[in-house]
View 1 (cartoon, helix red, strand yellow):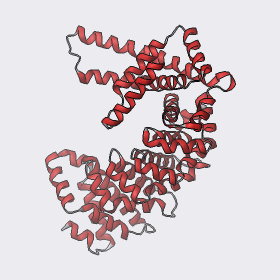
View 2: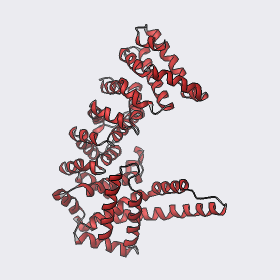
View 3: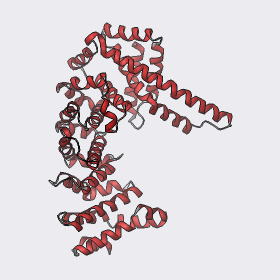
View 4: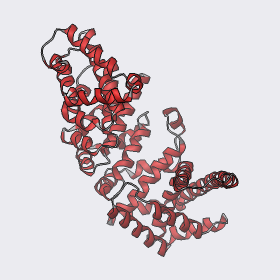
Length: 420
């Protein structure tokens, strides 16, 4: 009966009453009061293709009317509540017209408002850890929509905190989509690299997120075409100044120095892994410029994160010792948790740095190799430490990736180690 009301032609009042009732029923606190009752309710709504009906209703709402603006907002709240309670609903919701409506609403020539912000939020939720919705967005030319919406922030900062939140949601949605190789092609054709490169140069609030998008676009073998294009559009001139010095303003933009350095190092590692021929030579030559200053910066970062790891490891070892003393068993889950903590403390950045170090040392340029060894010796460190970090990286690489990817990357790192 509820479904028939939504897809019929009720008066505006009836429409809003139905939406209000559904919003109340699907309120996340209400749903958690009775898990069993909530399951029954959500099952009924899913069986009745409620999202398709809600989207039909959204199509008829006129946001020039105050009450109908509220109707759109409340409808999105229903969808958010349902997907939060049952995340697997995201695929069906997207396929029942919701993805299409969200993209249409985002690109509608309307002033920024709370509903546009909410649309960006729902879109980011739909795309999280979901390849089917990512593929659907790509098929609906959603990559172009995201790039068009983000291009506004190339030379202008968001004017309010809400608009900044929307910008971040759109960047998150784009990063999610780039996990899929077909969307990387769409991003490349849609000149996404050029837009992100311009954002990095313009030094606006969008810079930190643009860096994150570039990282997602270039990583792994699927990022090869984007890596080559990045060099073609003179991206090396943009990325190396960011490598040499972390911008002072990044904290104001909600990004830490560690996150910034992680994305820059990840981009450089991807470029070294994926570039071939002349473009790879252009990249390697950068490390010989100005008396190998970029090698010195790389080594400076190496010791910075090595020190951070010594602090983190000391703390973890203390905790392990206390646990053993209390008679607690160090299970695999606990060990995994400690490893995640080490990654978070800077181990992942350190692994990337060691990877770059091994790549440039094995490139057949004596000047680079000698400088790396010289700095390690000067600081009382050794190749053994770097080898140990890379060996650990190879053993833990590619969680969530295909077996083929894991084997290919492990083989490559072992080859680097043999020649390092």
